[in-house]
Length: 133
Length: 181
Image (tube, rainbow over all chains, first blue to last red; front, top):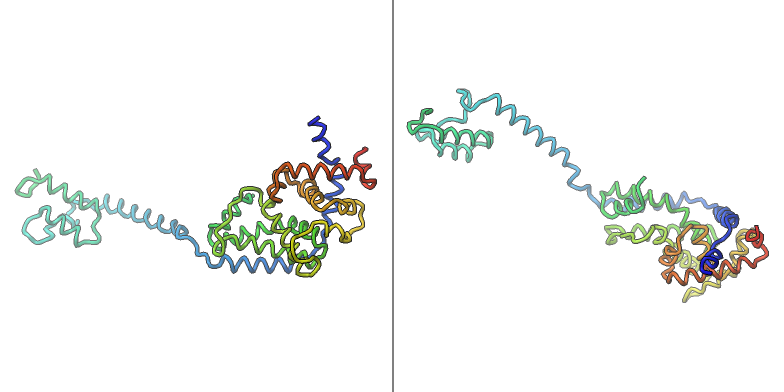
């Protein structure tokens, strides 16, 4: 009985098609409303700024370049090289010690963390008289 | 193709240009539906366009910065239907074609159909509430649940109105032949 009732709650396909065909005859020109709504939408959303994440690709590229530069500098200018300025008596105390590492870290913008670490490691590995053991 | 939910989300929170494009896509996708709904109520092209514009302006204002954003819990057409219907009725009242006060559905049944097609005449003969569910179910392809949500009535009420509408259509001499074939 329930199935029979539910069958009667549907229209024949032919009638549905005819109803849809008849309903499709709304002939109205919407160009003016199209333009007005487009203009309203432009004004409405104009107050939103682009999110900061738009700049992420630029920062990512800058970080990648910095990493490449670090790798190039690190492997082409070994700490032991006489031309390398890092390993030196930075504070003018007369000896090269951990204070020079701290002074270099504080005062130099160009030295990298890896260079500072290598400088400190070298100092730690030296014999008390400053010569390599 | 982006879904309505994805487009609504962009309207809610994307940057200005993306949100604007998303809204325009929603408009293009659903303007025909809204136009059919309002035109079926107002029976006047100018009023139909005003009602359609009012409907989409209302939708636009749900998104920031003027609104809190929209969360779709049903299809967008289900959301738009009552807005379109109320916009159409509002236009009729402004044009003094409906008295102020509560909307009386049967007032619309008295309006002359724009088309003398038998099917439209038969639909117009249905009480407005039954005509509404038949239109939503068989022309706009709403599910029973969608109709209940759009009209804010229980599912049982929708089924009853549909049942009574179809029973009435079966008895109509103008469409009886569809049931007999």
